[in-house]
Image 1 (cartoon, rainbow, N blue to C red):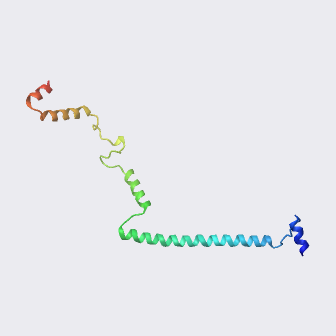
Image 2 (cartoon, rainbow, N blue to C red):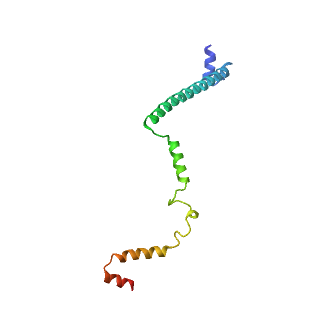
Length: 124
């Protein structure tokens, strides 16, 4: 027995274990099974956490992030009357075309508050 070990130390070939491949396959199978069990355990834990989260949301009237984002998107897509983000096609005819009239009406409003002699000067 000692001479076989000496041969291995000096660089000789090791004896091949006939069951080595079988043992390796069993080890890989055990690792895979442990990984599946770990994933199942984490999935159960996450489901329990989600249930608790939902109870808290229901209690305080909160919404999920996904629900909030969906509502915000829907609100943005829905055109509002008088909204600043509405498409240009939706502007009624005549709105925005009469900018000069608006400026004149503002000028007239300012002139009303000036004293009489200044009003005459600006009207000329």
